[in-house]
Length: 338
Ligand code: NAD
Ligand code: UD1
Image (cartoon, rainbow, N blue to C red):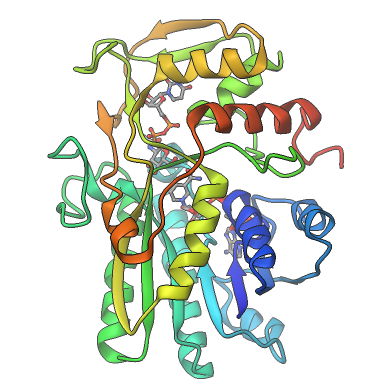
């Protein structure tokens, strides 16, 4: 397949580009580079020995996107493009809704005009809100009590895709609900390159280990979890990337929502210890108050992806820490000095 990756220069997009090329597909990456660097895709080309076609466009500008894609062929789409910082979405709700929703509307119109029917969308476990069960299956309620515009935009886009499929029965869409993506390609050549102070745990821990930040703030140690710190289901980004290839291959008319997670929970302190083992460095931390909007535990029931597609994670948290450390050590400033 020749696959259009919107947001293809970003963290998950670049790793998925690599997985697609390695499984014999072709890639067109469309990105406005608002939160990424062109360098990530140069490195994907270097690692695979294959070419990535690149289109620079802002998906919220429908006319410009249409023009940029004139003459560019593709027969499936993976839609990563969007804004993803939870705190920023609370401060800038209209920007978040405009970018995430407008981009999706532009894309769906474009797909219909061109008769491209296969779509995989980057959704998130955030659509489940505060989980009602220990392990969250796809049948769990969605869009109840969400605490931020980012999360709402994901739930709204899932609804938009469902409505589009109703009006256009050939549409074959998969919402992939990611749990917590972490790690990097084992080469350490591509990885997560957050702008400014990282919001997420693993990139923050990596920056402490490399000496770029003094200490980690652990947000709360009084949750009802084994050690009192928050528990999450961390999934290696290469497992996640391979999950996209499988999802594309299995997309059928209609809409499916499928979890991509490991089914294992790890606490903040377990992540700190795993990173210390992988890096051989100490990660100093202090216990701070809970972060607003956080929940105690979020763990996937990943059995649907296994029974339907034969997909499961094959990499551990230790693997993710080792690969994130390789990336962090060889690129302490991310792609900035490339
Ligand atoms: P990222 O920021 O690295 O990638 C998103 C890409 O989209 C960036 O390259 C950015 O430049 C591009 N982009 C943003 N607005 C655009 C626009 N208007 N037009 C064209 N390109 C645009 O983020 P990521 O971590 O790779 O996430 C990819 C997707 O997965 C996002 O939709 C995100 O919400 C979703 N997701 C991510 C996580 C996570 O923890 N990383 C978890 C769940 C879901
Ligand atoms: C966050 C987003 C979520 C998004 C997910 C994707 C919030 C509130 N939620 O989830 O919508 O889908 O990223 O990856 O931002 N932690 C610390 N110190 C830190 C950073 C985090 O203790 O400096 C703790 C958090 O309290 C949490 C765990 O580490 O218990 C993981 O946090 P994070 O990586 O931000 O992910 P989520 O909160 O699960």
